[in-house]
Image 1 (tube, helix red, strand yellow):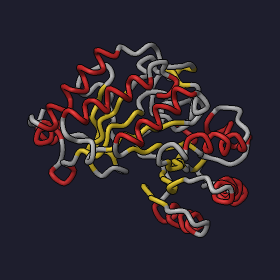
Image 2 (image 1 turned 180 degrees about the vertical axis):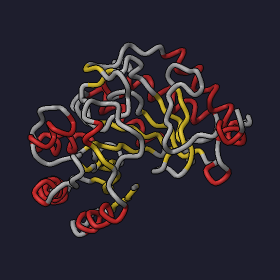
Image 3 (image 1 turned 120 degrees about the horizontal axis):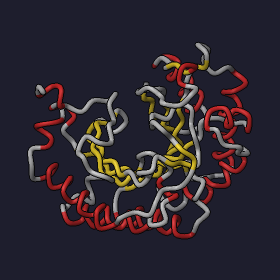
Length: 287
């Protein structure tokens, strides 16, 4: 295998690149550098089934019990390779050799893990050990469905107090029908706002939205206006969200609806971003 073939790419977020159970490195478009992923959902189970999800053999359910000692061993090993070893030189293009974050993402909803707070504590311990607390963020990518749990809320508070931290909170559409179509969950839009009120005051929170075309057609005005209404209501309620992470497909979906989905252009995303900015919210666009 050549050096270039070994390099991580935006399009390939292979969870098995290191041979570890919980820890995997990726180069991220949104972080513009290296993100170390934490996959607590090793059973490929999630309580949502988003049509754009790139997890093969996705099942409905929660994360299994986390082996905390193995997670700790893997994370310390990975960070040692990044900080003290030659990982960056071997696997990352020169322009991206920057460790940006440790992200709870993986193959399902990370906050569904029973030991999620303990896993967060391990990440905090590792960042402290390597002197990275002020340079490397902890990111949790979540659909918010467990945000009412006190243990999850305590973990979010701990993240914010410990150092740099962000929650990326999923909100793809603004009606119950559209949410069911895109996220495969029967969810009233007002519940999204209620969950945001649990999360955003505890830790810096961005709304994360994936926009895709459906059968070759971009989201139409009615669909967009309902989504924008959710953002507008969040602003009106003074929910302290940092802004919106707006993106489209980067990697192929492994869900049954994959053939119906398409990637939207940067121009299209930027036009929508202007409407978000008009609500008073910052936007980061990743085409």
